[in-house]
Image 1 (cartoon, helix red, strand yellow):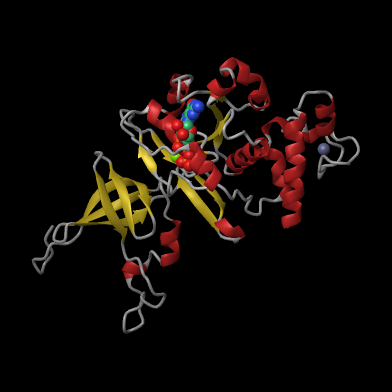
Image 2: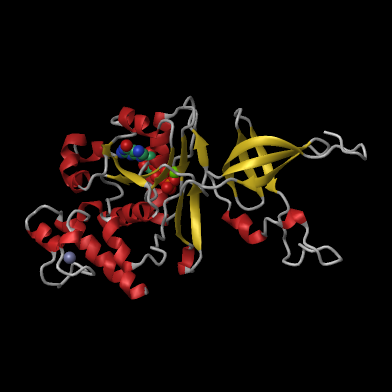
Length: 335
Ligand SMILES: Nc1nc2c(ncn2[C@@H]2O[C@H](COP(=O)(O)OP(=O)(O)OP(=O)(O)O)[C@@H](O)[C@H]2O)c(=O)[nH]1
Ligand SMILES: [Mg+2]
Ligand SMILES: [Zn+2]
């Protein structure tokens, strides 16, 4: 496009989805499938850079540096292309339909957005090597619930504990709580068809501790992704993550399917989740909540607690209930 001075000006170049980036250059997948590197238009590095000499605000600084940090993988953006410099720019971030956020590392206040426009969270653990950590699984599920995202559980490496049937009983609490549970072996190629089906056509965040086989599962289901797989002895013992940074992968041969393979999240905070909101983050407790004697029941020592009664009657898993009590205590301490 030519403007009056005969110079080419940036043209609108459709929508894209952010695949990766760290604040400077973002890799954006355009609608027809090509991937371009784009900068956020008008990104300002200094706080006073947004004003002209006469003091008026420059239009191109609407996106401030702080907003830049909020751009996340999965964001849908409007692109511009400058034909003279061949540069791509992100002109606008489209409204998000959902997001997965967690607290910033190091216990800071700022929330960190792991991914935007997410349909579901897939929490991956290993049946063994590394040993599964149930309390950590419960935390991942609470984070999904607190973000109002559907969640499913994958238990990988089942061949190490005698196969899927032998492993199933240990995870029955999660099925009873309403979460789909996939028992898989990336190594043996077991349970992958159903999981593949669950990932098709939607945006998923795959998360879980380091070394459980997240990248291995994705490689096994989607040949062509070629994700890096780490040696367990290295990654687990030294605490190094094989997967670096968040990255959204378009699923090969699957139109509309994306998976964010996030590095094993070490610090999983609850980002100031109000203690009373924890109730609703345990789906199996929901039917009992209206029946406690006190509306603000903490389901601990209170009399006539319907939740405790359900635990005593074997209707709610004792282990999950204990997780609830522990997390509730932590949230109340943070307050
Ligand atoms: N026995 C067995 N080993 C597996 C299986 N899946 C993966 N592994 C091994 O587990 C180790 C870790 O696998 P990765 O796929 O790198 O694990 P990850 O979850 O992506 O780890 P991070 O990227 O560090 O978060 C590798 O040595 C894999 O070969 C499985 O089904 N059975
Ligand atoms: Mg990985
Ligand atoms: Zn109660």
